[in-house]
Length: 545
Image (tube, rainbow, N blue to C red; front, side, top):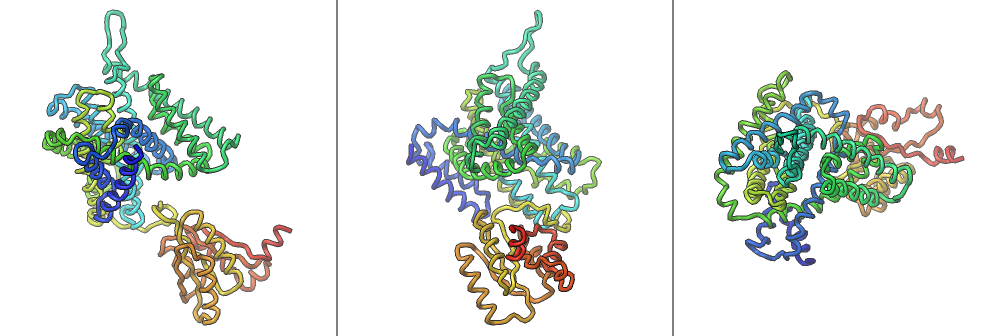
C-alpha cells in the first residue's frame, strides 16, 4: 500500500505541475496520471488503495465543504445583493433540471438517478473559478460592477445547494427514504422529497450551529489546543464525524452541517476561522492530488468510450440551455450589459472539484448507472475545466470593462509580499528584523525600498550588506528610488501590490514631529495598504518603562 501511496503523491504532483506549465489546470494532469497508473493501463496501484478510495473521497468532500463554509463572507453576500443570490441558485437549478430531463431520454435513467447526475454536472469548480476570478480582480476587469465577486459568491452558493440536494437524492436511491404511509396512500420517495428537504436542511443548520459552538468552546474558551495544527485536527475530526454520523441518523444533512459549522465558526471567532481556513487550504493541497489521481484510476475507460458522444451532447445542452437560462434570469434588472452577461459562459462553466469528489459516490453506493455517472463526471472535467480556465482570461478583455483596482479588496493568491521602507539610520535594522520575522512566518518575500535623491555610497554599501545578512534566507529585492519619501513609498507599494508596508517610527516627541514631520505618519494616512509601524528604541523604552 505504501508504494501505491508514493505513486499517487509523487506522480500526481508532477503531473499537475506539467499541466500547469502547459497552461492547463493542474487537476487535468493529476487526472491523466490516475488513468496511466490505474488498473486499466499501468496497473501499479494496489487493491487496498483502490478499495479505500471511497473513504478518501469522503475525506476530500469534508475538506471541500469546510473550505466552502469558512470561505463564505457574510458582508460580501450582503454587498452583492440579489444578483449573487440568484447566480447561486438559478443557473445551478436550471442546469440540474435540464441535464436530468435529457439524461432520462439519452441514458434511460429513472428520475431520481437523472437528477442525481444533474447535481453532479451542474456544480462549479472552485479549483478553476477562484484563481481565475482573483486574477481578474487584480487586473481590474469587471471590478466596478463587482462581477468577479458576484461569480465567486454565486459559485460557492450553488455548490452548497447542489451538494445538499445530492445528499438527499443519494439517500433516496440508497432506500434510506422508503416513503410515508398516510392511511391507504403511500407517498413515493420523490413525493416525500420536499418534506425531507426541509427537515434535513433545518436539522443540518442546527447541528452545524451546535458543532461550531462546541468547537469554539474547546479551542478558544477552554484552550485544549496550543497550535494551529491541533486546531485544524480537531476541526477536521468534528466535521468528518458530522458526515459519517449522518449514516447512523439520516434525518439531517451532514454536508450542510459541515458547511454551517465552518460559516458559524467564522462569525463566532474570526481568528479561529482564519487559522482553520489556512489549515484546510494546506490539507486540500494533498487531498486534491489524491482525489483526482484516484478518480482517473477508477475511471471505466470502456464506458467513457461508449458514452462520450451523447455525453458531449448532454453537456452542451445542459450549459447552453439550462445554465444560460439561469444566467439570464439571474441578471434581470441588473445594470450588466449583454457582454458582461455573456462573460458568465466562460466565467463559471468550469467543472472539476465537486465532480471529482462525488462523481464516483453513486458507483460506490451501488446506484444503477453509477459507471455512466462517473464517466460523465470525468468527461465534464476534461471538456469544461480547460475551456473555462482559458476562456476566462482570454475573453475578459473583450467582454468586461477595466476599472480601478482597490488593493484592500483584492484577495491574494500565493506568497505574501512585504515592503520594508528603510533609510541609512540605525532604525533600518529594526525594520528589517520585523520584515524578516513576518516573511518567515508566512513564507513570503520582501521588497526593501530606500528613497533618496543623493544616496551616500558608503552608507548604501553598508545598508546592502546588512540587508544581505538579515534577509539571507528570504527572497528579497533592494530598490533605491529618488523622490518624495512618503509618496514614493506608497506609490511603489501600490504598483507592486504588496500586502503590507513595514516602516519605522523613530521619534516620540511631539515637537519633533511638528518641526520636521513624521514620514511614518504620512505613509499611514496616505496608504490604502496596511502599514506596520516598528517603534524605535526611544519609544519602546518609554512604553516599557
